[in-house]
Image (cartoon, rainbow, N blue to C red; front, side, top):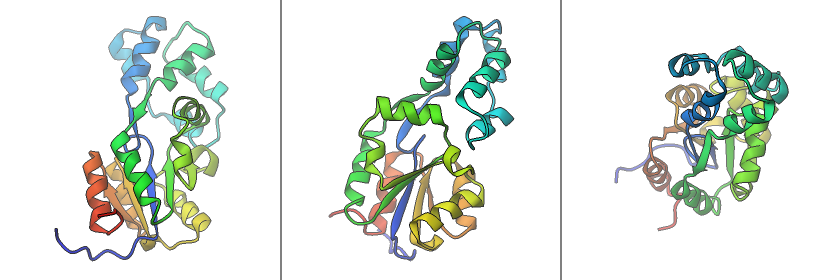
Length: 210
């Protein structure tokens, strides 16, 4: 293993979807399809990260407002509860190999989570995966802090709250744009394609027990 020349890590910051949780947007489309007047391809095209989606994830649009938008945009003939159930179906399962790594590394340094998310998904995480969020010293959710990754303000908010400088913090994220955004303001950041990427980066920095 090559020697690591990165600054010492004083905290680790984990993305949730794609790093800690398996996410599958096709599950939402499958749940909504029987209620939509749109054919499958048009339904898929209609479900986008549009302005209401972004507002929902930064606290500017309530669950009720967003689900009303989804019902209209996807031409769904169903109630809000059915829309929400489909939306929450996106959250599939914990990535257990990575959550075990969180349990190991948190014995050495604080572990935090940062997620582009919304009130509905956070509530579903608490119901479906009750042991997940308590693993972290604190969870920074975009709809609560008012900023989404890769906006610098999202990372700067976390740094202010935990009282550390950017080079002291190691981020794991599954989207290149978020990794690039974090690195641009000085964080150490690793692109995650599998739990091995997390394990290798933690081991390289001496954060796992040997």
